Length: 115
Image: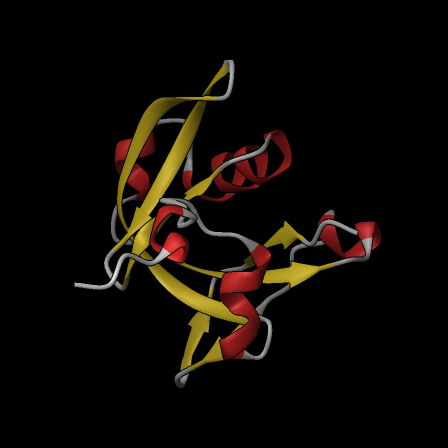
């Protein structure tokens, strides 16, 4: 059996690089929302039906989801979002509407790419 160092460098959470194979954006259906310690802070983690990695919500994305789906995270289950990577802070604060798979997608949230 080969021991690969890269196997120990995998994250449980989505990053901008996870979107590279999908032209910078992906559509996700929310399966669950949990609260976990990430670093030294407690953060909300959004889990999806179509990916095993979760999305750690920063304050901006938390506010966007609350505005669209309500404060009770149980109401977020089953909702569809589009996550995209960006290096432009201006886009980060401007969710946009997309049409994906023939159905209207409610909005998008950004995962900012670190420079």
